[in-house]
Amino acid sequence: MRLLGLLLLLFAFSPWSFANKFPDLALTPPMGWNSWNTFACDIDEKLIRETADIMVSSGMRDAGYVYLNLDDCWHGERDADGFIHPDPDRFPSGMKALADYVHQKGLKLGIYSDAGDQTCGGKPGSNGYEYQDALQYARWGIDYLKYDWCNTENLSAHGAYRTMRDALRHAGRPVVFSMCEWGDNQPWLWAQDVGHLWRTTGDIINCWDCEVDHGTWSSWGIMRILDMQQGLRQYAGPGHWNDPDMMEVGNGMSADEDRAHFSLWAMLASPLIAGNDLRQMSPETLAILTNAEVIAVNQDELGVQAFKYKTEGEIEYWFKPLANKSWAFLILNRGDKVAEAEFDFRQEVVVDPDLPLTGNKYAAGFANSRYAIRDLWQQQMKGTTKTPLIVTVQPHSVAMYRLTRIVNDELH
Image 1 (cartoon, rainbow, N blue to C red):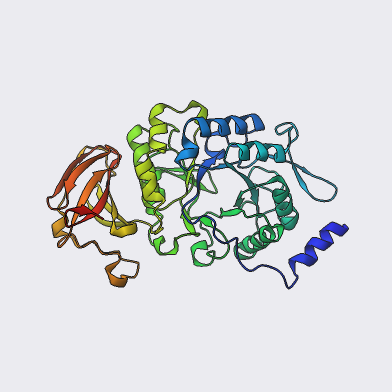
Image 2: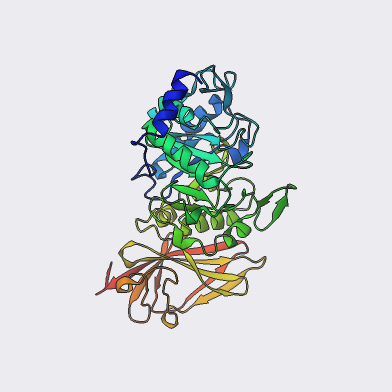
């Protein structure tokens, strides 16, 4: 082993080694863009620079999308000392120059690696090179790492992800650590001090309710992934988020399905990582991705994930506690037909089923208090909870509201 590698190894096991991830990052769900859903391995620095430009000019950066994340296949080869370099044909200016360009736009650059010997796309993985890779990322100015789980036979997920966490800490540059082992090892039970977010499922695909079988693994539609979140919400919160995968908004579903997908990810306190070609998106797609009132639900400081309150046929009612005793309320029509939904708040007792009720912090009290109802997609007020809410919900769509408590005829 060369001297540098030996020094890195000694440092890894020194008494100064860190025991936790970088603190004070991802206190609200990360927002940004990732290359995989649209481009897979077909990425280069021209695409990334153009995407950075459109994130600024479209208003996405100002809406909160700050992480511009390269996924698999940016890799070139390792040098004689074991340090990874980008593909010189695809990234001729180098990764440091790309990071500088992205940072000058007021954005942050993310990168991808894998805990195994090879990435899912067959590029060099980080197994055995974690400390060198983390040091290289720090030199380049990387702000976010998505760390995958392909080609990891005989590895411990907990051990592999802790190793990369420690390597990032030793490299010294604060990095959001996105764990992508697909929920196979129940990371929500052990990863709160390891990563800032962890995947809860296999890969998403741009369909409403389907499974695409790839032989040894499957891709899942929006409703399938939604159902896989059952029982996980109590593990999410500021700095440690359940991740149901990147979004498919703008990738071929209907506008209603895109709005529903975006609304549900906001309610789930999911990372909002767009996955479409931003250079080609329609005004309708942009309007969905930059709806400030829906984003505010996702970015609420409490960081509480929504829960499904009840189901009536194809209609589901979801609630999400928000700061200042407000609530987000969503009506989902999973079915293929238009549905009429009626919700009489005065007859419902809405209490968070999983989180502690210190001082009724997560109880709505609709019987004794009034809340103003604001439609977050129509962006208009819809009366108060004093009377039933009656709404027509299109197939594969949602209605979404913010409920703000009224005290002495004033909103609080």
